[in-house]
Amino acid sequence: MNFLEEKILSDGSIKSGNILKIDNFLNHQIDVDIMRQIAYELKRRFKGVAINKILTIEASGIAIATMIGDLYDVPVVFAKKSETANSTDDKYVSHAYSFTHKRMNSVFVSRPYLHATDRVLIVDDFLADGQAVHALIDLVHQAGGEVAGIGIAVEKGQQKGGRTLREEGYHLESIAIIEEMDWQAQTIRFREQPQHDLTNTPIKAID
Image 1: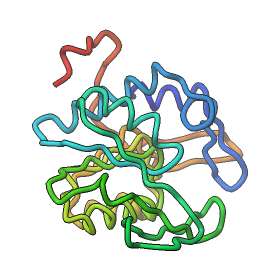
Image 2: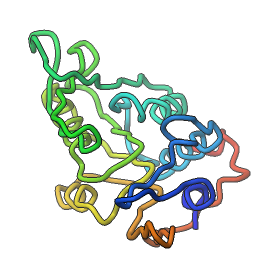
Image 3: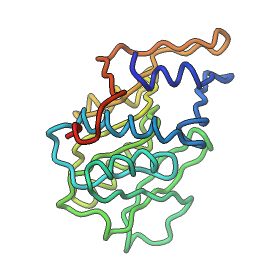
Image 4: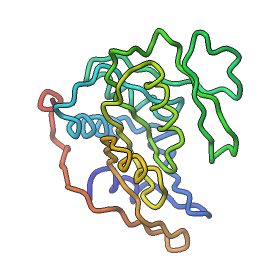
């Protein structure tokens, strides 16, 4: 069991409808040490992959993306959300359905911040059906750039997003992959992955 799985079990909870609530350390209140470990681990998993930009979506992915951007020493761009996009002349626009808010959102990045020369690492806190990630992929492709990889903190493995992205050929790495959750029993089963102890890993050793 890795550090993020342990943190989910110790500090997370499951709400009615099999909703995982971990906003006390990941996407409302932020545990900086956990964010740092997520960044180290994702950078380790993409070792040898050329990356010159990090892309995420507001707002929950920004903290993780910023940590990773610091390790790579590359710019971090976050796609902004809006219900409507008035003009596409100065921005790349895509669309993603929000299951949380039950509506379709337009997401956009201003054109000066994505280029055809970019090799982009897409980062987000959660992956479920993959709507947000596919919107980010679309933005990169509109700019003529390349998706070098997709790094996720928590993947809901019982939903289709991860499977679809892997079938499409993307290099997807998720630190914690949830296979099953039981609200009544308050139990979580994770997909087995290689264990990596980052407790005493110095930043200079991550490359």
